[in-house]
Image (cartoon, rainbow, N blue to C red; front, side, top):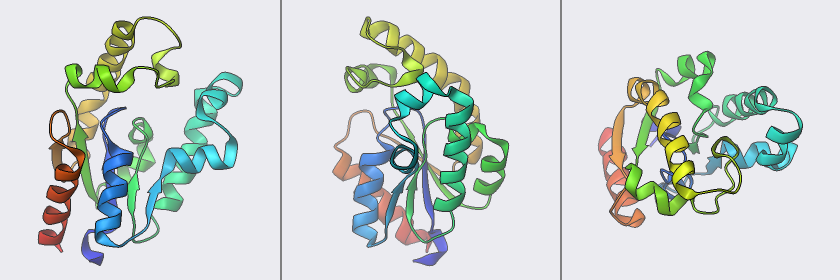
Length: 173
């Protein structure tokens, strides 16, 4: 199914890009690449990178991982902020890009204990949800501009969402 590959997942933190992307890749019988996992494997845990080297260093590592991941026929999950880099946006302009969205209510359960650097450390989950909402809202115009198709992950089982994406991808090839 080369016409839709690489199939790229974008969206806010906790939208399910990694979990659903992994299922879609398995069903399409292609490799799965999670750029956050690539960065962590090469440079250490993401919270540690943020703490010791800062967000700019993380974004540079992330950019390198994205460039490499987009070279092959795979399902690729990008970190929520990967689309902030202008070169990444240019590269995604002619790719098949799936935007996964999630409602504010649904994300609250997913964020508990997640240790995501941009959301802060310990504290009230409601504070994390507010920070998540601010980040997601700010990035949404970019996500929407890049998306070939959008799937909401708020309420349905991830296996059903993955099935819908696979059906959609096969129809496009």
